[in-house]
Image (cartoon, rainbow, N blue to C red):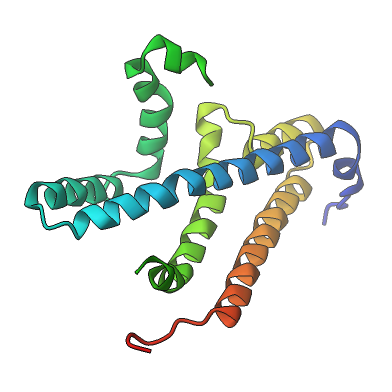
Length: 178
């Protein structure tokens, strides 16, 4: 069995790289939530609208997002959409009750967002997996590097889950009409 040595990863530039990757992964997660929550609310309201064309447009949007792989979305939004934007934009780099009921799926989606930030590595974003690959290439410590990345994903996921559990205990979903 090979000798495991995590110490090389816990100091200097390798630690800096991994921490930079964690920061970017967390930033991507938060940005995705900040964009997705209002957009999801608008799409939900559009799906409930009395105007059939608006409902159809919202349904089409949901199905397009649901049925296209995440990687295809990532590449489309990163490479294709910016080409359509004006030059100026390119340079500038019942609700409370419903919110309670949406917390469990929202926690699940937040976990998905956190884990799916690893997909951003394909467009060169220096998130956690990108930085882990960089550290592994420089140190030849593949097991230790990817074990740390895995532990980081697990740790943040557990924090997100814990926050959701605490929220649900503090603000339990009440049956309709109460």
